[in-house]
Image (cartoon, rainbow, N blue to C red; front, side, top):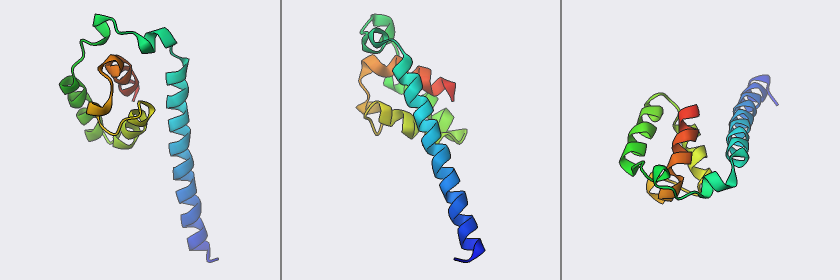
Length: 99
């Protein structure tokens, strides 16, 4: 295999491993939160609107963090904000603000 091809392959593998590492870090952060907190339906947890989340996520995307946002959304079994349960908006916001 030519050295250039091998170097490109190694760079691609490193980028993939970096993405996996970040996804695992986010998953660990999510799992370490208190289960009661994740399942809470207190009114303070639902005061966040989908529109507000969209604004925050759009800002983070403009900062070049779109891939990380998609990884976080997958932790909530979602492809977009409208797929996230409103009770989880607070946790989603907390995780996105870490970025």
